[in-house]
Image 1 (cartoon, rainbow, N blue to C red):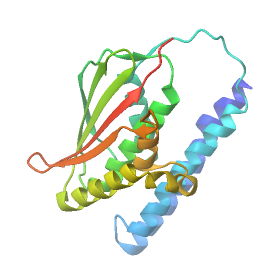
Image 2 (image 1 turned 90 degrees about the vertical axis):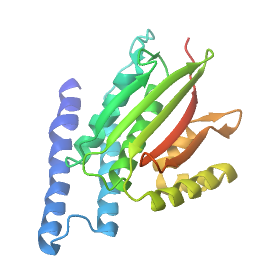
Image 3 (image 1 turned 180 degrees about the horizontal axis):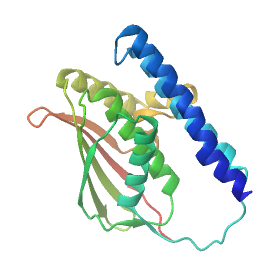
Length: 226
């Protein structure tokens, strides 16, 4: 089973991603355009769905493990999410820094956090319009179970970003973001909002810092450490 899992995660995954890379390169050459919004969006969804499918297939070979769970650093979790997104989009090379309580470790909710930061990095790739964007992640523990994270990234079109922030905040406020989850599989900022539920309400706020040219996503997670 170990050999099968290694083949799926390393060989098969790479071969399938290379097919998508070849398709993208062919279209770029034929059109002379680096990005075509409808096509690029479809490819982004295809890459994400492929990544999820490969992970699902690989998990079929998992066996039961010890109930002893070692804590993992939040910086490591975020870095892992970054590497996954950079693998999906080789031209995406963000410059990431960490601040605040960078020594925070988490025992549970690891996969949820990885999925959240994958969505955030993917959002930067899709919408920042900056070739090598700066990203800063500030993290703080508040009390025993509240993890506050500020994810701040470069943004070129601030007016467009402001509209996106306003639209998403309204969807989060009204609960409309939940309606998109069945169709989109919980992608993007909807996934982030859903992951910050506390007492039935999402704790995600999106804003734009016009002076600094930054897109900001503020999140509070409920973290259970046993």
